[in-house]
Image 1 (cartoon, protein in one colour):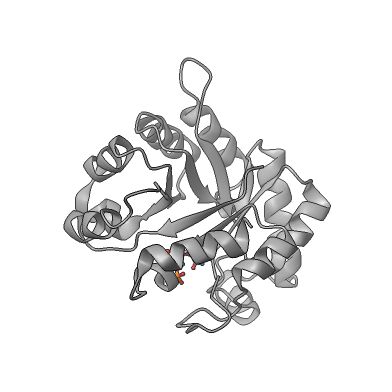
Image 2 (tube, helix red, strand yellow):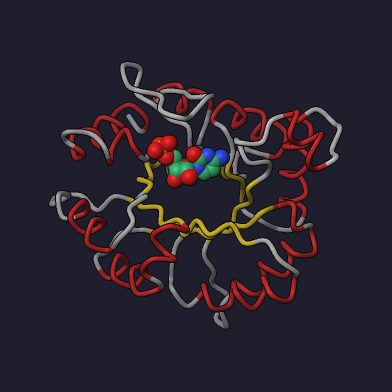
Length: 232
Ligand code: C5P
C-alpha cells in the first residue's frame, strides 16, 4: 500500500479551489473533494481536477437503500476518481450493491471505503440517539469487519484506530485517517489528533489533512512537511 497525504479541499467554490491548487507547480497532490465543493460545483469540478492530473478521493459518504446507492455509484464510476466512500451503517447489502454499481463494464473500479462511526459521534450520542449500547470501539471494529466482508477495500477511521484495524482485518485493508495536526499546530475542532509522524508509526495508509495545509501561510511548504513526516 503506497502511503500518501490527501489534501481535504474544503473550499466553497471552484475559484477558491483552483487558486489553491495553482500554487502547486511541481507536484500534483492527492485531493479530497467533499460534499460542500461537490454540491456547489457539481461533477464538473471533479472532471477539471482529474484533467489537471490529481488523484481524487470523492468523499460523498453515500447512505440510502441498496438500489439507489448502486445506481448512484454507477454514475460516480464514470467520473474516474480513485477513492469513493459510503456509510457502513447502510448495511452489508448496501455495501455489496455499491461495489457492484461502482464496478465498470471492464471490471475496473475506484477503491471503495466505509465510514464506520463518525468521529463526531461519541458513546453518549450513539446510545441516546442511535440506541446502540456496545462500546464505540467495538462498534467501529464491527462495522469495519462488515465492510471487509462486503468486499470493500478499507475504512475511514481515526489514526488512533488504524493499528487495530490492520491487526484485526489485515495489513492490506486500507485505513484513511483524518484528524492530523502538526505537533506545533492548532487542533481546531478536531478532538483526537495525531501528528503525521505518529500516524505513520501507527500504520495509516493515507492521511487526510485539511486546514493545517489549506490555512497555512505557505500551503506548499506545509504539504511538503506533511509528506516528509508521513511518507519519509
Ligand atoms: O481541516 P481538517 O484537517 O480538520 O480536515 C479534515 C477533513 O477530514 C475534513 O474534510 C473533514 O470533513 C474530514 N473528516 C474528519 N473526520 C472524519 C471524517 C472526515 O475530519 N471522521
